[in-house]
Image (cartoon, rainbow, N blue to C red; front, side, top):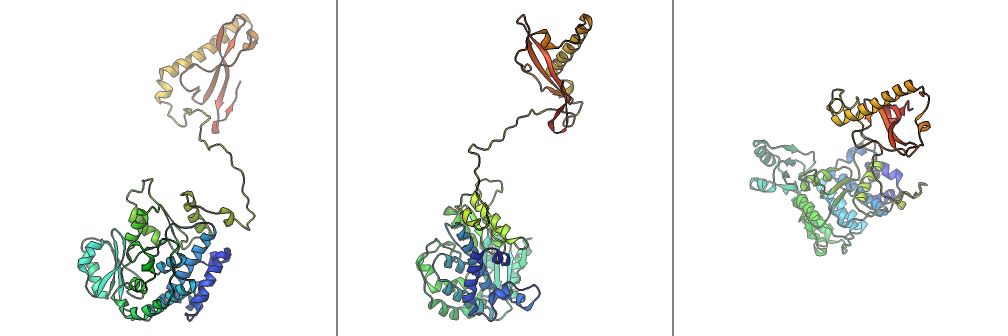
Length: 445
């Protein structure tokens, strides 16, 4: 998660190092050792503990933001899902990096200390359909789409909600988590977390922050309230409402900064009803597991660029030796310069275009008849070796009279016109050839 970017881009590495320096003060193991650990090692296993998962997500998200920011890509709005909202608030200026790291580390540590045993289940249903089935032991943890809700709480209570929808033929999926986040299971940590939030300094946001706690644009007062962040732990993530708010405020391109395109797919479900609609927003993910990180990130930034986002490509290519080149000043045009010929390869020999087109037949009969007549006259007069220009003053080459294509059955005839000494203009066959593969003509004469 981010190791290739760490080796490739100094801006990303510096930002990740800075976040890790603050987080390491509150973690038992250095974050980078966990983040870049080899698979199937004890350090790699720690990444699945929420005490390390949340700091790792925060650090990578902030480093990704700083990297694309260095390339001139700046958002009109920011938002974050769950712990991602702390990252969004930090880059918007609400938290210093030190305070944001303190809040994230406390969040993960306090959640990790809670008893295990709760579950989270995604169900194919709307919020209104789920609400009547809730009890004090199970609640909505997230509204991720019009028909995508996550419930969390005691196992038996959450399973009862899921089974009610399974009976209707709806899909359900039990999530792999250590705790029932955003549920009554979080209540025991709220007081301790409140005490951490109360000692932090809060700044005025320099970017609009759409809070997924409310699904609306947060005010500076809301973001500066410790209680906002306490509720943020316990209450549902209103992703659907937040994405719709962003769209209503004019967002037409969404860039996900995280290790996988989970939010990208959910955002599309929230907004796209007709995939063929050209007014749909653009969605891109900075990273995708299993794909080269630099290439994936470049693709995402390019998608933002072609949608109109300002991007400093000179900054992106700095130090690579790449240089800009002049492009043609005329608009690129797509224009065919060769006729759409009918050939046996594209049309059956029995096609009416070859066998029954009256204009076609008349044209070729005239060409072939004139050629045979000229040969007979040459035989009678003994002037068979004389050429058309010898019999008259060469004139401008004309084109065939309006009619069908001059290509027929793989043959090509170019009728011309010659002006004789008496001033009369006569049609004659200027050239005959055979159309070869690729549109070339051979055997002209």
